[in-house]
Image 1 (cartoon, rainbow, N blue to C red):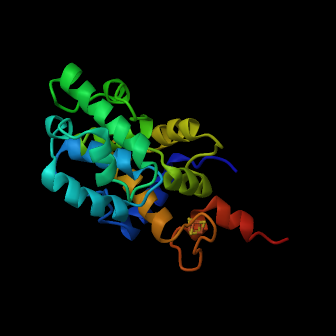
Image 2 (cartoon, rainbow, N blue to C red):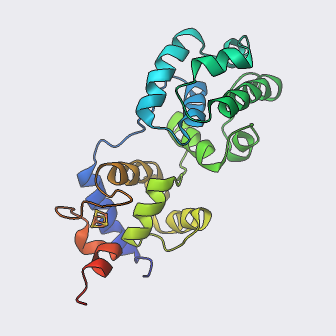
Length: 216
Ligand code: SF4
């Protein structure tokens, strides 16, 4: 499998844009801080479950200062429907302390600063940069990784290398929307176990499909 050339990439991006013109972040938030918390909570959980919990949580606690009035046990109780809730509660409170002490209570706008916060990895930091601040960033989650490699937009078994390859072939101004469209395609059609290739408009450009359907 080889990475597509720029004109093939442009065709794939256009087809994704036609298939998912409205693709957007499916976590609910109204401030960068809420998105940061929601994204930390979303690891190994569904956006729907996180939205259900944060609807309740953010109605009562909306800033780092308000979160810091909660004990760890209080926060654990608020988010206990979500996987890894104990470590997430611990990280969220530690991140709130760091935001208060090092950033004046505001969410920072650079990748290294975001990644300095407890519990915030590269993917979470990029989701916040792109969705809260509109700063071009291409976060590679499990869907982006799988779909990009199937399509031949990348060719790697490693997330960070996939991210570098995608950033090299996709125009910077399209990083944010492409991230959402690859996720939507992965969630709605190109699932991990059984992609719904029949009817997929990307078939003719998909390395995975071509390999699976080549004459034996
Ligand atoms: S043809 Fe199949 S594997 Fe390829 S992008 Fe479409 S659904 Fe995914």
